[in-house]
Structure formats: structure tokens, C-alpha cells
Length: 308
Image 1: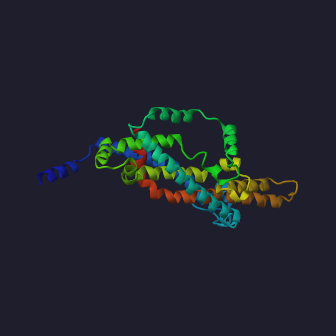
Image 2: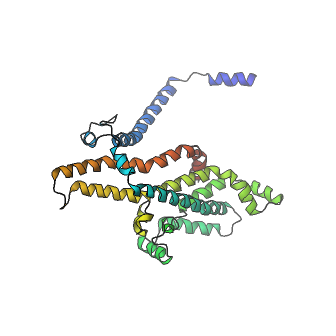
């Protein structure tokens, strides 16, 4: 009881004026940083619901002006967009599954001191972070493996990130004590059983972080598809949205076949209208996923990266 009273008394100690000033400065700086980060995102949202003329004239700042859903209607009525969503969802799920199947066991193995030659493996992994063959040799390897114009070209060549493997290894080094493995071996537990029965259940934070990072990277990727895919039916969402944006901008600038000034002005209006809507269509799924995995970031990423 005495200890509880002492704790309550300590908690009620009045903060000094210097402490209050320090807190006020921190809150002010953090609030400014928050506004700097959030306002561009908020501006994209309200601009996607506003008339392009109002956006271009600078009349849109806090609220949508001339509320319209025309941009979203144009995009979502395009069947290629829905096909791109389905393709990107498939590529993202397969990329996450393959990446985790490689990085989690690989990071765990590299974290074990009993692994012979683990320092050599780490040197080779780190080496790839500074030196690579480049685009042309990579394309030749993918082509010789017969993966050009197939879905495998989008995630097999980049299934394991060297940086992510190092983060996973550091996580295991800082969260799985050697005594745990030794105790399991005394009880007759094999290495595979220890990994699947004890390591995996304790690795939810790092698995969630790696899954989110891999998913976001794959979801936003378009360059690999631009290089390796020729079949439009295999295009991911980002490549389809890129094609829509380029087509709308080309129409807005006119061509030899379009000479009517009113037609060009209308095309420019639609180009501006769908530009912000495209960003929202591509970003909403990732933004919706983040809150469910955010709670794992401190325990997963901080232990895996900062301590490393």
C-alpha cells in the first residue's frame, strides 16, 4: 500500500515550467510536420472530387469545389482497370507468399551461430546491395529462364530483398535467445519442429512488417511489367493506370486528327479530372491495409532494423 501511495505521489509531481515549454515545442514541431505530410494527401483527395477548373485556378484548398465523381466514373467504367486490380492482387499475394517463404527461413538460418559459413553468406548478400548486373543482364537471365511475358517475371527475380533478409536476421538475433533452442533440443525437439512450432508463432511482428513492405512494393510496381510483359491481359493495375494517364494527356494536347479547340479543351479537362482520381484508385487498397498492420511496426521494424 505504501509503495502504491509513493507511486501515485510521484505521478502527481507538478511538471516544471521548462518541461511544459519543452512539451509545447515538441507538440508544435510535430504538428507542423504532420500538416506538411498530410496536407498533400488531403489535397489529392479533395482535388479528385473537384472540378478541374477550380483546381487549376487555385480555388481548392480546404474543401472540394464543384463536387463531381466524373473522374472515378471514367476510370471505374474501364474494364481494363478491374482486370488490372485482379492481376495486381494475384501478383501481390504470390509475391508476399514467395518472399516470406524465402526471407523468414533465410533470416532465421543466418541468425544461428551454428550455421557454418554464415559470415560468408552475409558478405555475399551485402555485396548485392552495392553491386548488381544491371538491367540488360537481368533481362537476359529472365529471358533465358523463359519467364518473359509470364507472371513469374514480376516477382521471382525480386523475391528476396537483401536488406529485408538482414532485417529479419537481426530480428531473430534480438528476440530468440540461444537458451530457447538449447532447451528445445534437450527435450528432443528437432530444428524443423523448433522453427515451425516456436519461431514462427513468435515472429508475427516481423512477418507482418515484411508482408506489408513487400505488398506495397509489388502493388506500386510497374517498371518490371513494362519490361517483361507484352500481353495486355497480364498488365498490373499501375501499368494500366499509367496507360490511361498517358492517353488522356496525349488527347489533351491534341493531334492532327483533333483540331477542334473545344474538343481539345474538353480533353484537357478530363485529363486533369482523372489525374487525381487515378492516384486515389491506386492508393486506397494499401491505405486500407496499413492500419491493420501498423501495430506490428514498433516491435517488428524497430527491433529488426534499429538494433541491427
